[in-house]
Image (tube, rainbow, N blue to C red; front, side):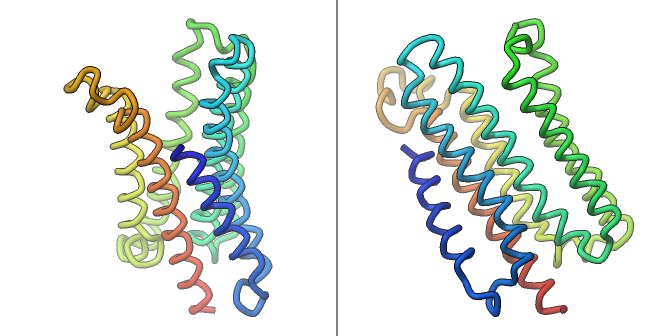
Length: 226
């Protein structure tokens, strides 16, 4: 249920932002934010569909499992683009390089998610490696900003605190999911509510909205600077 609620909420926010007059939200800002809205809506929407139809049949379950992973990829790529755009606002060359980098990694992730060959157990390390590379690739542009602009820029203009909070929510949700908490402590008590998978999805939705707040903050600061 949480992915559906998150999907509907993001659709509402996207409609509100994208229908603002250009005097309030400039056209380029709408394009940049659209990449994030698309990633969040597709990720949460595909997650909801997968969990709804997974038990239909093996073939349907496999198809929507692939789409679920594709949605995760789109959310990751969509999260990177606004942050890179505003973080390197005055440096178009590294901006383009880093956006191209995450886009290529995203394409590779979708290939390993959709191609049946990579669904085989022996390719599991490759699948995991691509997704890990996508996440860790944030270190490169972050280090670039730290070296060139200093910690103060990361803290004040690149929404460092919100980004760390977002990362903590994602990691926390994944940890809960991987360790099967709390059902491992209360067997049979969390079959319907408060199971680790539900908590994981809740953490993901919260993290997605934290990221939205972070990039909104970055956009506002850039617009105020002119």
